[in-house]
Length: 97
Image 1 (cartoon, helix red, strand yellow):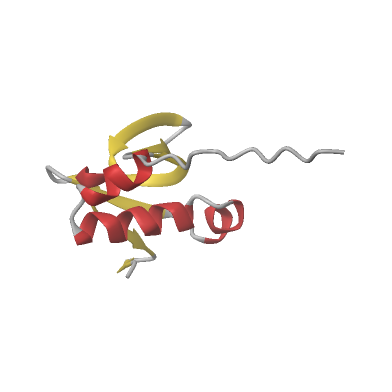
Image 2: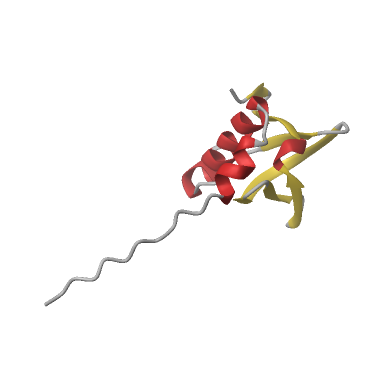
């Protein structure tokens, strides 16, 4: 019996995106990934997202895909923002480090 080993190419798209991001944006991306997990979505409420241009949104993370974050705000309104537009994330009045 012959065993056929399949080799899959690892996608490099995530690495390409990350190589173009600043250290600050990478840190925020890591926080967003952490906060998008089921337990963290329930434990870390409410979150306030400071978006470039003086926009403040209270809500929770639905998904983080490539360089976009999807948020639920208000009464179930879904919005998407580029990760590099998120300036900081605040929980209970304290910026998440």
